[in-house]
Length: 98
Image 1 (cartoon, helix red, strand yellow):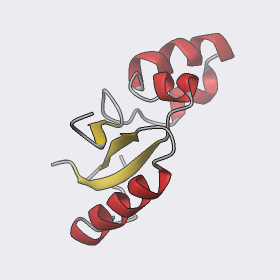
Image 2: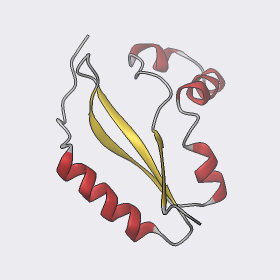
Image 3: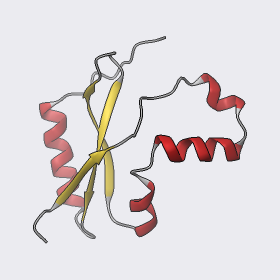
């Protein structure tokens, strides 16, 4: 293959507020999560190595992330790339409230 790693957004939307999640039932949360996070489940199902990595913040100050996907057996490559990303774009570890 021509490329070693596939880079995707980690999430399809901005993070939702925490409140509504605990008031919904299990099935409604599964459906909501499918729309919110469609990029990660395919790799979990296939068993290909993938990881989400913090990638700075949005204009609102909320954290954002990217997903790295590698070929089977390429976990070391993903970890090395994640280390580089973290060095270039350190995670702030806090998010705005409200």
